[in-house]
Structures are given as C-alpha cells and as structure tokens.
Length: 143
Image 1 (cartoon, rainbow, N blue to C red):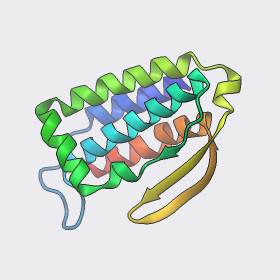
Image 2 (cartoon, rainbow, N blue to C red):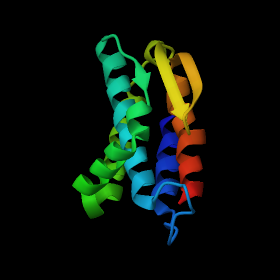
Image 3 (cartoon, rainbow, N blue to C red):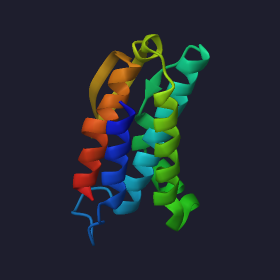
Image 4 (cartoon, helix red, strand yellow):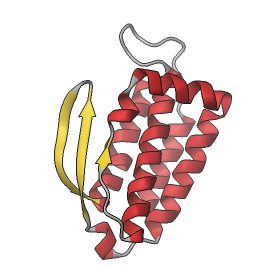
C-alpha cells in the first residue's frame, strides 16, 4: 500500500505546473493547497484509527476556496515541500498499520465539484488506495 502511495506522491510532485489555469478551474497554488489539505486530513484519520479514536473523513474543507487561498498564502513557495513531508509522514504511518486497522471502516464524506461522490463508511485501506490511484493522479493531470 505505502509503495503505491509513495510513487503517487513522487509523480505528483514531479509534475510541471501549467502556466495559466483554464477558465473556471483551480490555479496551481489552489491544487497544491487542496492536496496538502487532503493529505493532512488523511494523516489525521489514519492517526486516529491507529490510536483507537473514533474518527471521520470529510474533504469539504479541502474544497473551500478561501481555505485553499489561505493555505497557499501561508505556505508560499514551500507548499510542494509541505506536501512532500506530509506524503512521507502518511506513507510511514500507513506502513505501520495492522490488517485490522487497514480494514477499519470510517464514516466518509467525499465531494468533488460540489457533487457528493461518497457518503458512506470507507476502509482506511480504500482511503489510502483512492489517494494513490485517483486523487493524486487526477490532480497531477490538472497541473
């Protein structure tokens, strides 16, 4: 699991940014801020499961334009470095999870472009796999 996730972060971070965002799409900085927020939320969820705490996964904050701009402004030119560090932390955490922890279902709310994609329990394994196979590659394509 962590090898695929690590490879997805490496590919994402190596992707060159487009010069200008197409009309109505996120800027490069907003995409990077989104990935940083999604990664932070995933770290929180994985850490909570590993500690035995009750948790949920909700990506709405990672879609809020004001929050995206705020994270981008606060991190500045170090936003890719932040994502690199967060990705490594998440991979290290994922490597330590037991099969029981990976199979833990977490109440999940996933939105994309204002549409609800998931409103149901999702296992930690599937959250991590979705990040590696869908979320990071999708945003690499946006860059």
